[in-house]
Image (cartoon, rainbow, N blue to C red; front, side, top):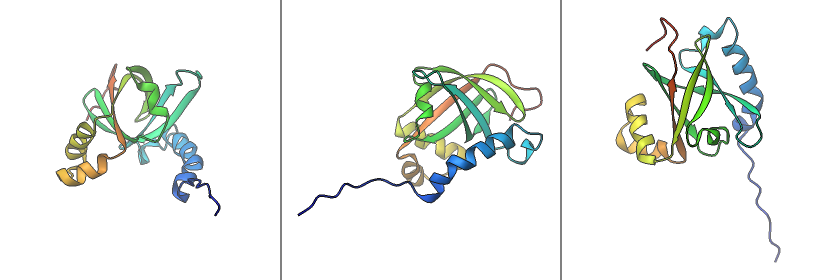
Length: 147
């Protein structure tokens, strides 16, 4: 009897994100950002160990000077926000500073999904599985851009 090693291969759409994300980042930084910047922004975080800058396009919800992002826990870039961290956001055509924190509690993620997406409590708990909540406090809100 032989033992086979199972190798996890991400779905095709997930592998495609490696190529799509730089395109979306470029679009969000271009004069055409208005096509998608009402629900997408670019978050730039510095790796705590590597010092490398990571640029990730993310879907967001804004309430005044607070931005909420829900990310898949398997992603790695958000881990650089543990314990609060300075980040740069490219938000609706402007670069703004924010301080980000991570919340891993599934109930908090679920509550955010109920508030943002109007999910039922059952659907929100399903959605919250293996996700993290990022709270980003803006240092300043670009004039005319508060939601």
